[in-house]
Amino acid sequence: MFLVIRNSSFVIRPLKKMRLAYFSPLPPAHTGIADYSGQLLPELAKLAAVTLFTPTAAPLPAALAHLPHHPIAEYPQRRWGFDVPLYQMGNSDHHRASYQLALRFPGVVVLHDYSLHHLITAVMAGTGDYTSYIRTMGYAQGPAGVETAVLIPLHMAEHPLFSEPLNQRLLDSSWGVIVHSEYARAQITAAHPQLPCLVVPGLDMVGDYVPRPRRAQLNLPEGAFVVASAGQFAANKRLDVALRAFAQLRAAVPHAHYLLIGEIMPEANLPALLAELQLEGAVTALGRIETAAEFADWLATADVLVNLRHPTIGETSAVALQGMALGLPVLVFDHGWYGELPAEAAVKLPVMDGAALTRALHELAGDVGRRQAIGRAAQAYTRAHCHPAAVAAAYANFLAQIWERLVS
Image (tube, rainbow, N blue to C red; front, side, top):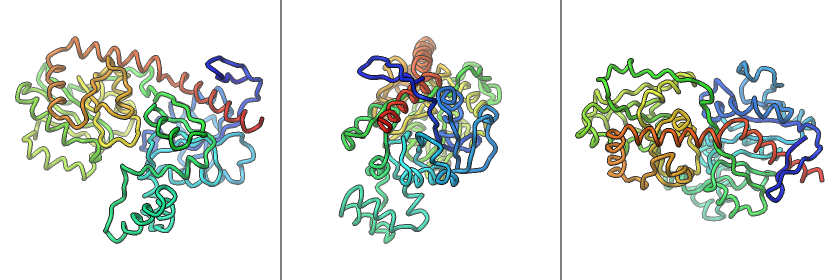
């Protein structure tokens, strides 16, 4: 039995249990979508007959070991055994095989980032297949896209990674799409008005886990104000803006400390920033964290979480949601998905406004009550909207409607 939403009312449809082919990297793969699927699948498997197709042959996590599991390359010959393929699609090379398969065998796509240009670059241009990249740019932009793509290997143009999403071919061939923000839905609906599109909130990745903060390992003075940022630090995570604001904060709050949780890419230029801002000793960079529990422990060590992104490519930040689920005030730029967070549950700042970030940090450093109030509202938001069971139910309802359209 599936619950179908029609005209804001609930309709029970006597359908057999849907046979779902599920495509995603899974833990222990180092990608947020692997962790997302690890949380979602136990609930989704209660509502559909799920078979996993993954890009690697790594053993399944214990919580998923009971589910059928095949290499992604086997899907073409097994495809007749399924009703709907569901592709978890991110903007990295982890999704190379899923992207190529989704073009051949359409299904429902979950876009975790509105843009797929980084993925397409890795799949095509990154492997020397510029012919396919030129075609894809032409599909998206016509002759102008072809011209740009031709100039790139000649070093006369750059990949328009943040201005051109390159998701058109995938969306044109899909049965439906799931996104995590109204920002992404609005863009998809404008470009593909006939494509069924559902907004499903991001997941609460913390759940019932009780973190063990690790402040003692930092050897900080009693009452030190700890600011954290987390994830993979590429240039668009704006570590430069965050650290410049933090350097200004330190003039008034000398015991403030910055905690960087995750892999720092060379383009972030951290050593030069620390030297320029004279922050050596005031910043601890942990590097990549191997387990989800340890990641949550380090997040819970902080007083506030700074989670900047500019430009946005329609992403939803799993790190921001983890911080919120742990009861941290999260400071974000007020655009894209971040701008849709409730005003009481996050601190939303003008985009690229370092002075506003400094002021917000200073206010939070001196007001424990405000930090706690924002943290409580953030936890209430994630518990109300982001629980894996609620997200899985939304998936099942949408997939049932897609399936009904196909068989009716």
